[in-house]
Amino acid sequence: MLNVQEISTPVLLPVSFKLAAGACLSLRGASGSGKSLLLRAIADLDPNAGEITLDGTPRSAFSGPAWRRRVGYLAAEPGWWSERLGDHFDDWPSARVLATRLGLDADVGTRPVAMLSTGERQRLALIRALLAAPRVLLLDEPTAALDDTGTEAVEELCREQMAAGGGMIWATHDRAQARRVSQRSLVIEDGRVHEAAP
Image (cartoon, rainbow, N blue to C red; front, side, top):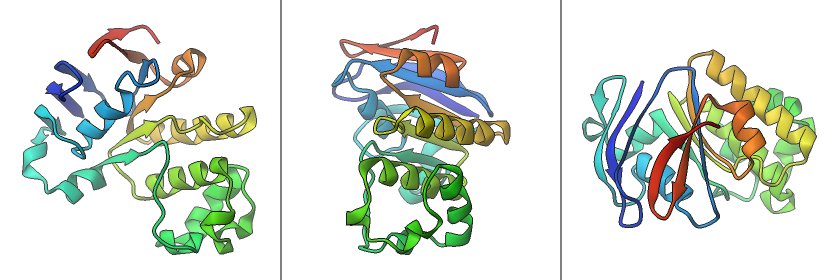
């Protein structure tokens, strides 16, 4: 599905790998090692070199927004552009179903974003990303602010996305989480990216 060839940034040396449909690749490394940089390069949000294809079509054939609709990036600190949470969703009824699955109150859509906790915003940003139905989802520490129950609910929802054929690249500091969610792992050390067991 996703074929990454010699992608590099000013900080990261070239790396190549493939991600199959329905698979998850975890991305590990110390804080500041470049996990976010690699995800942002794949999403074409920051300067990078190399070639990426999605289902055989090169990234260069897409506009930036069109690429990111297919290869979605969920930042560690997602952005919000309206004071009211519900304004960020085209289909709040569908979002509400997922919100309750992730342990959020059904009326959360009526709240101001500023009144939400970091963990609530993190789960709602994941819902927003999933509802966009990307082929590949790039997750940057999506459970960093969650307790064990919240983390388990997020992992289960993501497993369902993969079972439906979606691919994921999941940055995490948690080696146990990497083992739970992924079949393969990339590790970043000193600007070099190498494959390892999760």
